[in-house]
Image 1 (tube, rainbow, N blue to C red):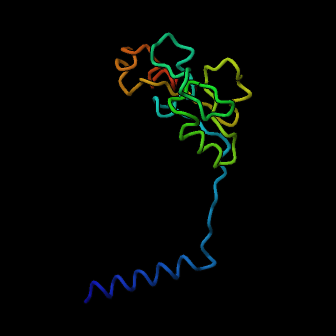
Image 2 (cartoon, rainbow, N blue to C red):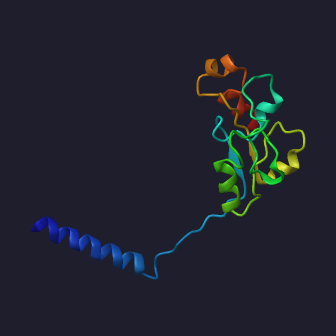
Image 3 (tube, helix red, strand yellow):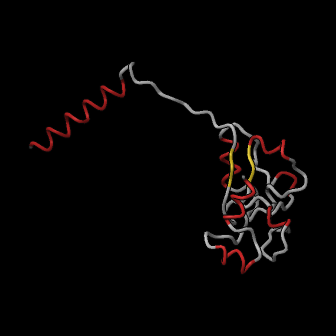
Amino acid sequence: MPLAASTARFLLLSVLLLSSPAVTVVRARVTALIVFGDSTVDAGNNNAVPTAVRSNFPPYGRDFPGGRATGRFCNGRVATDFYSEAFGLRPFVPAYLDPDYGIQDFAVGVCFASAGSGLDVATAGVFSVIPLSKQVDYFR
């Protein structure tokens, strides 16, 4: 019984504190989405490197606006594209190495991810892709 009473008091205090007007809710505004990673979030950087690990051909991209394969390893947008849109940014995050975009386009987000990369530089070396360490260097 003492445990149940303690739990009840804790829940009552939690409800009172959370409903108190003294509690301030801070809502952060996301101004940009910077993406590092592998094929789960690659927006097409591998299109610009000499590797066989690419997805810039059908059936990839069939649900992307315009039905074009962008280098994303999916049929449309990757998870970070949906996050970008949910944060009120553009509906997709451009690839850093995409020649159609410049530095001014990256003000609200950019993707440095490369399919086939990993934490170990040797993993990326096997596939001739951009290792995580190089992705971070690009960001700097």
